[in-house]
Image 1 (cartoon, rainbow, N blue to C red):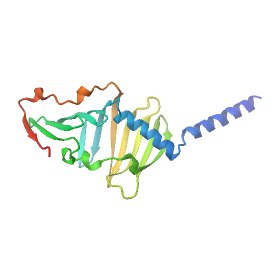
Image 2 (cartoon, rainbow, N blue to C red):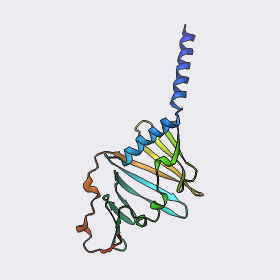
Image 3 (tube, one colour):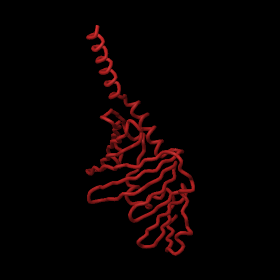
Image 4 (cartoon, rainbow, N blue to C red):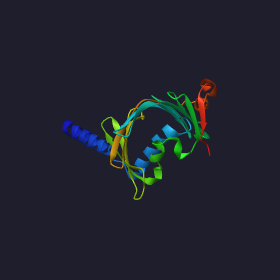
Length: 204
């Protein structure tokens, strides 16, 4: 009787493990959409990031997102995007540069790597303590060729994104992730704090 019980338990464990590690493309896309909304949705989030594209771009800082709004702080810049206006403070130059929120010239790196979820196919697997969601660009899509999103299975929060762009691959490490509780006031540029800065308005 004991052998049967152990055998049944082993079968159940094997079945559960197999199920946990297998996702259809549709399930993978739903999982991705959930995480994407957690970051960019109406409740907002904050996180610390570190990225190093060797020879091109290296930075780390803190960023806040909520719908189409964002704010980030890194070693050189502070930028606010309230959904209409993108305002970047260049602390070393003591200069404030203003763009329209969607102007592609506002950031020479980020705007090169625009992301549209429907331009990708999706797969997912469980890997230890993480859920790994893999994205591959459909034929003809430019920008990000492929990406892997690493999600902590216990918290449901992102821990890293590994992206391939052209011949370069890089990992964006994510720490101190917090979801929700983001006030809209955070995305408003505090002009009074930078009254003695030079202002350059590049809005069309």
